[in-house]
Amino acid sequence: MLRNLFAFLSGGLFGAGLLVSGMTDTTKVQGWLDVFGDWDPTLAFVLGGAILPMAITWHLSTGRARAILGSEFPGRPAPKLGHNLVIGSVLFGMGWGLVGLCPGPAIASLSWGGTGGLVFLAAMVAGMMIAPGVRTRIDRIAAAT
Image 1 (cartoon, rainbow, N blue to C red):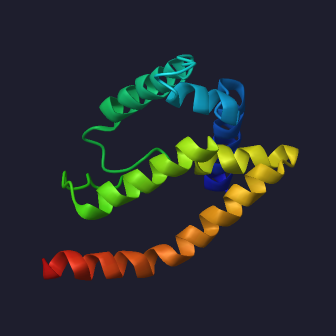
Image 2: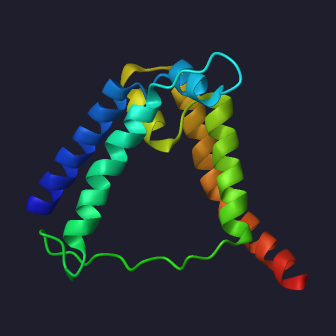
């Protein structure tokens, strides 16, 4: 029960942060990405505001086996730059640049009923459904070369 309460509060705080920071405003996000045009640097504060508490949390959790609520910390991922990471990053960046939304802000933007968010969410779900098959095919191609 306590775990669900913390999940609810964390999700609500995250959604409120996305809304207040402007991450759910597609024009603000596209302005951040338009470096050679009408660039809007204000989302740099969002990035800094996310990095600082995360760095503190990583420092405080170093050497601990379990989180405060009892779950285990995930292991560090292997520092491997592979084709899956590159292709996934390119697709994520293309979607973010074209639409101005990524998954978290897209879900948060559904609360005010925008059709653009619904279309993005439908496309995201479709992409998640076809991704395993595409990944298997890419892995086979990469193994053959």
